[in-house]
Image (tube, rainbow, N blue to C red):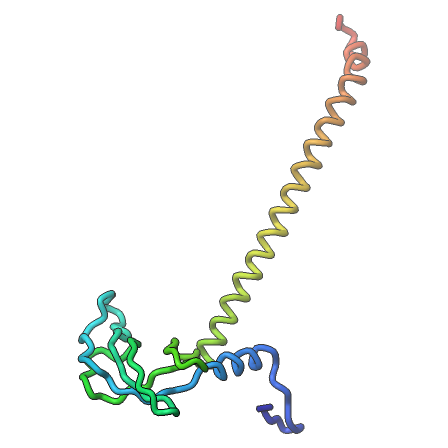
Length: 159
């Protein structure tokens, strides 16, 4: 949906279209935890426990009950209502990124792409400079071999 500005509707940029397409691929599914989830993540770092894996059950629009594992909050008990995310085939998938997460992902990708392009330009410049320096030194060496004997005679000594 186009956003509005004070000058009328404004078309979203390509980033927002991509984000909208990613979000359209998945939909929220009300589910019920089929088992108690552990209270802490097995990879606890001490900063953020984060979600843990648990089995959930949900029913599709055609009435078929599905069971699969998805991420839930630590300590979720069996029977608790949770939100799972499914794709068009009914398979559980990761939650779509929020606008902030997607913007950070895009910014990180941009920084990496710019850094890579900069490194490529710097490496190319270094290689060209190195080749030019070798060529210049070879030319000076050839010139000195041609002119060097004449300089010995100018010093007045025996060459």
